[in-house]
Image (cartoon, rainbow, N blue to C red; front, top):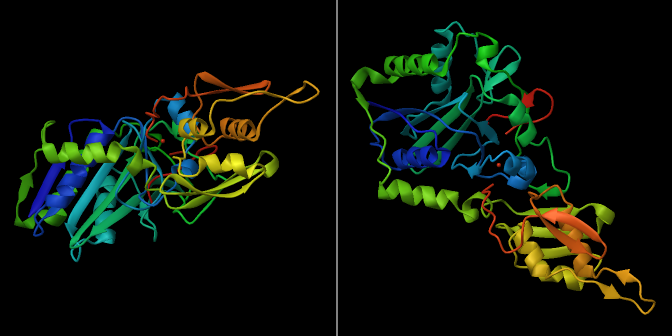
Length: 363
């Protein structure tokens, strides 16, 4: 039996929650094929490090939220020019290569020639138009991917990093590749045409025992709301980050170990006593600065002004490219750096793109 669904909303939190709900509850004798389009967001893989993958400051400036999905793979940029497809089936039934074949055949029915790679990507010529990722839970399997149709690749480029040398980790790294929108190949192609082609191909491949159209759960569905609340939280987006070491390069005076999004250990510091104030603190700018305490001036015997060790660390953090920067000022000694106001919660749950015309789609 084939179950089909198409989301009518563009809220990425809602769409990922509905997808996960269907994944947890679909009948194991069925195959589910779904489609949705999200408003602008960045979605990282389950085992990725957002500080390494994303320019978080650019994401905040662009009002682009960051989400973490339940599948693996790399960071991806979504917007309303990017179609997401999902296929769910019993684990011993789901065939990733067959799934790509029916997506490829759907695109080729629209005269778009694409090829699948051994890493489960789709390319048009030498440029990537689709990346895919996977999730396996007990007897269930999920395969989803994006199709670049008319996405804002300039914004994608600004939001995604190529690398982050400050961070050392075994977290999954994205694999940048040159990308292209399908409208750059055929200006008449639209998301709606691709959706219809994918649904026809899905029926041809999976619909021999019948087809059922699924209705998305209502906005008040308790289980979907529970999933959505959990996936919005800092603990999921940032706290699920694999352990990493981070160094702050100015003079190389501070190196921290972060686990579950919390500073677990001070590896190196010019003023260890001051740096130890960070232990046990969330790795977010407001929390770290609050742990250090307010910036102060100290007068030496000669009357000249100098900064304490905590002030020096605070300035290192504020000037780092790892954190979003906004409108208030941290002043240590005679220097000032603008930051998010202390005491305010970080509502930017997190931020895909690379340099030139390079971008990332899920692996």
